[in-house]
Amino acid sequence: MPRKIIIDTDPGQDDAVAILLALGSPREIDVLGIVAVAGNVQVHQNATNALKILELAGRPDIPVYVGCERPMRHKLFTAEYIHGKTGLDGPDLAEPTIVPRDQHGVDYLIETLRREPTGTVTICALGPLTNLGMAFVKAPDIVPRIQEIVLMGGGLFEGGNVTPAAEFNIYVDPEAADVVFHSGVPITVVPLDVSHMMLTTQPRIERFRSLGNKTGVATAEMLDFFDRFDKAKYGWDGGPLHDPCVIAYLLKPGLFKGRHVNVAIETQSDLTRGMTVVDYWGVTGRVKNTNYLRSGDSDGFYDLLVERLSTLP
Image (cartoon, rainbow, N blue to C red):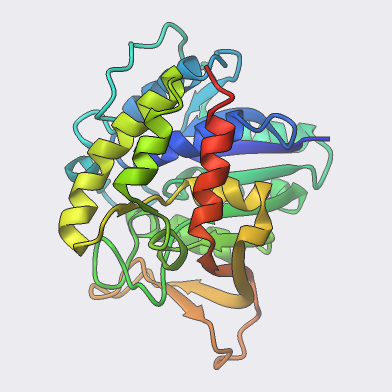
């Protein structure tokens, strides 16, 4: 039986590739729905981007819901400087003919988790954790019903990417992240420590383009645009590809290595707000709440991406 997932996301070129990877893996993954959250750009544009990706992949049947339009306690910080004005700059994707569902994304999360059997739904969080944090506050009864949360966020050995201490997804809404990490749900984290190993070098981008299908060409065009900022920032041969690691972990966990640790979220400090405080060496005695991934096989990761995206339109 395929694993049932809900994707909570702010697409984002790397979010888009993650969605495509999930859709290209129907034997292993059943995407119940996609919930947009404010993050890379405003929430309604993120929902539109999700709809575009579904139409590109030939899956207009998957419902998209609009979630929270701002973080729990602070103003929204966005990332047009990386993702472009639309959040999905690069390919020329048609405006979607499908529209988001009327139900609020947080209510969809609550309703679905109450309806599906306990322990059968995994949440794949690719953006800020606002929707999940709000759902947990509004409906605490759903917390023990979740099979697992697999999220992209944080960093330890690589530091932050939006401040010296904080990674973007956690920085945007650390209060929501704090709720999630205190929830007791099994959590697997894909941090910058892993995604910074997954560089989209030009030869890897060309592998997508050479697939010849619409999905492969659009992916190459997304990554051509997405890479430019990080290549200049880090001086690397390619930019890191963050969010698809979440789906790749579900498909092939053997590609990644990590350990069970405590992760706490800094919400107060002006200097380190949004930092994931990772007790990697077990010095605090705090309860271990997270499967924290530390490294990954980049060649295997890109082989998986190319294989699965080749099956899409």
